[in-house]
Structures are given as C-alpha cells and as structure tokens.
Image 1 (cartoon, rainbow, N blue to C red):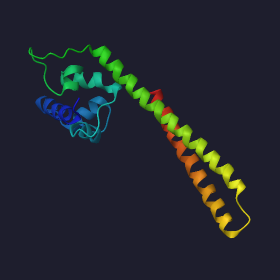
Image 2: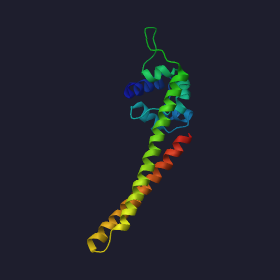
Image 3: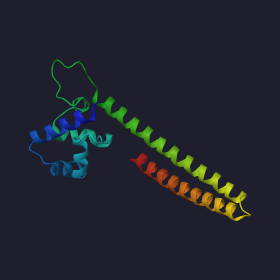
Image 4: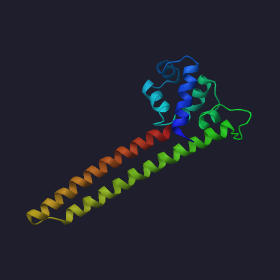
Length: 156
C-alpha cells in the first residue's frame, strides 16, 4: 500500500464529489487538517473511520487501500470486513507496543532512582546523584504519559 497514491486517490475522489476538505471533515467528524494529512500521504485514516470515509466517497475499502479505482482487470480482491479487521488488529498491536514502551520507561526510571540512593558523599558524586534523580523522574513521567496515551488509544 502506497500512502501517497492513496492520498492522491482520496483527493481526486473528494474533488469528483465536489467536496471541500472542510465538508468531508465535518461529515466524518475530523478536522480538515486530518483530511489534508491523508491526502498528502503523511498518515492514513484510522480503522474506525475507513468505512464511513468509503461511503462518503462512494469507494470500496480495497480501492482505498490500492489507491485506484477497481477495474475488471484488477486481480486484487479484498473482503472489506477482513481488511477492516486486519487494520484494527494492526492498530491495536501498535497501541500495545506503546504501552510496553511506557512500562519499560517507568521501570528504567525506578531503577535509576534506586541508583541515585547509592551515590553521594562528595560534590561530584552528589552531582551524579542529582543527574540520576532528574533523569529517573523524567523517564517515569514520559513513561506515564506514553502509557496513558496508549490506554486511551486502546479503548477507541
């Protein structure tokens, strides 16, 4: 799947329907900047909106993924439900990896915090202990942020 080809296809279909990015965005409940990102190939639509997008543009999911109109000569045949299920599973896996990264950052932050307790005594060692403490707090905050973001995306 070529994101740029899919984006060009989306833009062409939207223009064929005489729709602006704003009109399509309102119909889908997203921003016009999101439509722009899809059309420039910077990102792809979320699985939860693909079916509605295809209905708005009168295209099939396989046409969307191919980035071209289906012709009788097309050898690719997709079952829309299977493709949507596959996209959903891929996005769920990505969210689960995000959760894992968040937990790893939290654990590393806790380990660094325990190292911080073992330093001290001289000015240099106090400095190192302070750096370790700062890094551990930053890592744990980043881990919490990433974990929460992953949980929110997982619930969608």
